[in-house]
Image (cartoon, rainbow, N blue to C red; front, side):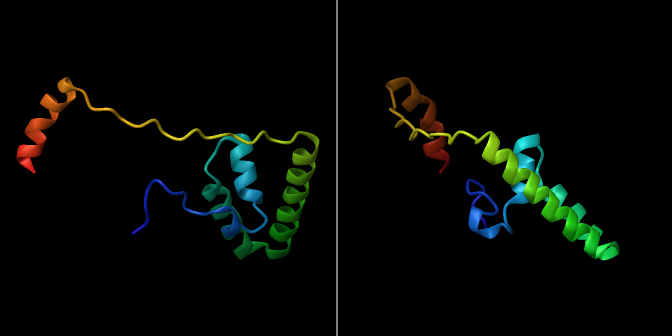
Length: 96
């Protein structure tokens, strides 16, 4: 089973990252674009492949003109238990 905290596909699992980049830029889940392209492959193979490469060129040009800033993720702060929290956790310990 897959851990829900990890992303479904890493950067190495993407084919050029076109759908992921467009999903990130426009704020939608890239699986919808992937599904649309997959269905389109059944009906117009050459058009979908050409469109995919055109979208890839657009993503490449947009990333070269306006590069995205790398987000720095700070490590999570450790949780310190206090006396009040311990009293709230006691019923859970008994249940376990």
